[in-house]
Length: 429
Image 1 (tube, helix red, strand yellow):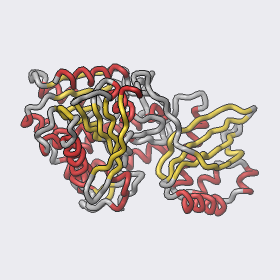
Image 2: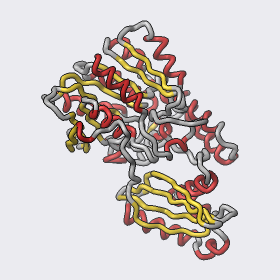
Image 3: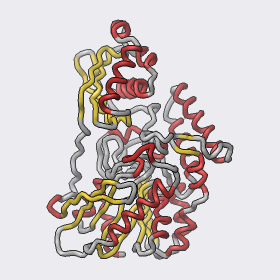
Image 4: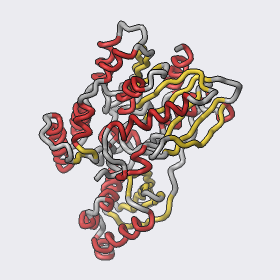
C-alpha cells in the first residue's frame, strides 16, 4: 500500500545518515534518529538512547503507548519539518518540529554531555514559519484559492498580478513525493518562493497540492497518469480558460521537470517549458547515483548497510528482477518500469517549444551528468536556453561547502537570480 510519507521520496529524501552543518551536529542527528525510532515503532531502540534514570522511567511499552496515543489524536506521522538546537547549561535541547496528518508536534529532547536523552516533552506545534524573500512584493499580486481536478479535487492557489492584463502565466509541477503546493521540504518552500517571485514581476502562477499529498494510499492505481499527468493537465486547462492569461508555460521541478515535456505533448497549446533540476536519465539511474553520493557522506556502518540494501533493490529494478506489484520506497516496481520507457530528450525533439533548462552545481540529486545530456542534444537548437548555477542546490537555494540533506533543514529562499532569469525568459518567449 502506498504510504503517504514515503512515495518515491528518494529524489528529495532526508536520510538520517548525514550529519547536519550545525554547532550541535551530533545532537541534531541523534534527535532525528530518536524521532524516527518512534515513528517506525522501534521503541526498544528509542529506549536505548535514554539515560539510566530515563530508561527506568520510560520503558519501551510506555514510549509505545505515548506515541500511539499521539497518532490517535494527530494522525499518522509524515515527516520531520525542522530541527533546532540550543545550549542550556551542560545540556543541549533539540526541538524537533514533526508533521503528522492532522497537525504539528514539537518534540523537545534534552541531551546530556554523553549524548543520552535526559528529558522528553511533547507539545502541540505549528508549521515552522518561513519568511518571504526580498524579491517578493505582496502588493503586486492577489491570491485566489481555487480547486482543480475532477474526481480527485485538489486545493490550489492562483497568484495574479495586479493590473489589467492579460499576463503570461505558468503552472508549477512539483517533484517526487506527496508534495503540497509549496513543495515544502524541511524548512523551505521553493514553490511559494517561485510563485510569489514571478507574480511580483507580472507573471500569473497556479500551483496545487499533489494527489498523493491530499489522498495518500487512496490513489490507485499508482501510475504516472494518476500521480502526475492527469492533474497537471487539469491545471493547464484551468489556466487556459482564464481570460487574464496571454500565454501559458509549464514549470516542472525534478521529476515534475522530467515529465514536463510529456505534459506539454498532451497539451500542445502550452507556449513553452521550464525544466528545473530535471533528470535526463531513467529514475532508477538517478536514484542509484544519489545513494552512492549519500553513502560517501557517512562513516556509520549501520547507515551504510541501509544504503547498500537500498542500492541492491534499485539495481534489481534496473534489471527488472522485481515483480511489478512489489513496492520499493512507497511505489510499486511497475511505476519505475513505466518511467523507464519514457525519455524527456526524445519527447523534446518532437515538440518545437521554447525550453529553459536550469540546474544547480550543488545539486547531488540531479547532477551535471543530466544537464550535460540535455546540452549535448540541444545546444545547437535555438529554442533551448541553458542556465547553470554553481552554488545552488536541488531546490535552487544557496549551499556553502559540501551539499547534503542537511541543507533542506536550513531555511533559505530560491535564488533571486533564478527568479530574474525565469521572468526574463518568459517575457521574451
